[in-house]
Every structure is written in structure tokens, then in C-alpha cells.
Length: 206
Image 1 (cartoon, rainbow, N blue to C red):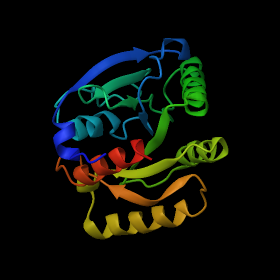
Image 2 (cartoon, rainbow, N blue to C red):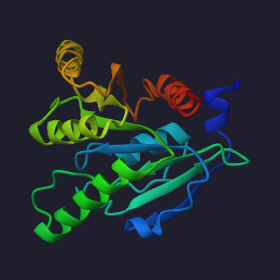
Image 3 (cartoon, rainbow, N blue to C red):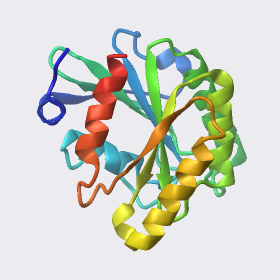
């Protein structure tokens, strides 16, 4: 299949549904690419940038806003789906909500047969944190293939960014399910968006 990633993402992109629990997931009729990351890491902003839309995915400065699995369909007819997952690691969320989110994330990642790859977002200003390591270890254990994407690259200086990139690549060597390269992005400046679009298409065709 030969597709132009920029052309594809500029075509049909539609919100499908929100799933607060596994029983509400859509029928597994298309490959899925899931987006995971700490609360306020920029998942919704990155999805908006990937799809060339301003607000297909909701953005908020309030961490923990996304509390369900939000599905978006790409292509006409639907070629694949993007899944915006609940942010993890938000300490101020009620404990019962945090527990519910974690069970939803764990069960989805471990049991979804059409999940082709998970994209784990890391804030380039902070690098990989302990809570990120917990998610990566869970993905390794479940043998769920994933790639790391550094977000908000425009928010730090070039020398700091290069250091974070090197540290992130070094950390990846400890994780057997991780894709061996990282992607550095800025949703505001559109840096790295075409490369990530290409990677998503390659992932659904594997």
C-alpha cells in the first residue's frame, strides 16, 4: 500500500466515540494506534497537529481532562483509528478515578487485538519520569510494541533538547518492546509531524 501521509491526514478525520470502559469499545474493524502519556504532556495537541485540525481532540491546561478512550477514524473508507488514552500520573485526581484510569489503560493495551502500536509521549522539558517507566515496563511485559515521542520541543533550548534525546535513546535500550528510534515533535511549530505521520502509516501496514 503506497499512501501519502500528509494527504491522508488532510482527508477524512472524524471523532467516532468515547469509551469509559472496555464494553464500550467500538468493534475491532480497523487497525488502531494508541497515544499514551502523562497528564498534560500534549496528547490532544499532537493529535490535532497530526490530523491538521484545530480541535478534533480536546485540549486543556487542566491535567487529567481526558478520562476515557477517545476514538478518531482516519480515511475514507476508514483506514485506521487513533485512540487518545487517559493521561496517567496526575497526582491530584481522586484515587478511585486514578485506579479506574489505570485499569482501563492496562486492560485495553493488553487485550486489544487490532492495536498495532502505542505512541508514548514524553515531555521534552522533563524527560522520562518514574511514572513513565512504570508504563513502559507494563508495555514490555505485555509485549505491546511502542514508540517514544518527545513533545513540546520548541519549549527548550537546542542543547537541552539534544541532551534529552540522547538520554531517552539510552533509556530505550532497556526496553525490549520499544521501537529503537525516537520522534521529536512540536505541535505548535509542526516540527516532526510528517515523520510521525509516516511512522503511523508504516505501523498499521506491518
